Length: 170
Image 1: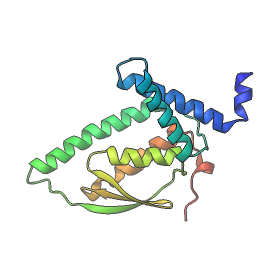
Image 2: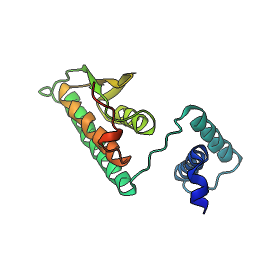
Image 3: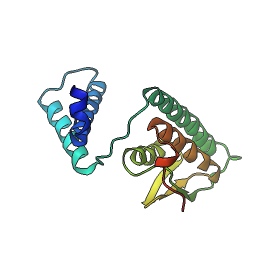
């Protein structure tokens, strides 16, 4: 009955999801300490910001895909960090910085925010600009551009986005 009541209230469902995420992050960052006044204020501020500036469109997650996404991201971060270090330390592996325009397949909202943020956290990549459905990414080498597509594929899987929900190609 509670689920049926929440089904017709996307803003309330979104607020509850943000509240749970905020509390979970607080517990992870503080080593399991319950939030005191500062914690409650921090979670409340994060909840307000999420509701004020976030999208109301909710995308369901595939729980097992969260682990697959995290594994892919951590693997990419480790291998990318090694690659960047090797480029900096070895004279034979040169750095060839460039900008790449990448046409996004993920829709605006949570999926796009996750993708754009994750790209900037990967070694050797930096999201420079988002223009409608095109992302400008700075790379240390043009060969790194395949990582963007692989990461986007993981985001699409995570949010259960099938062909119909993706952005139509121009």
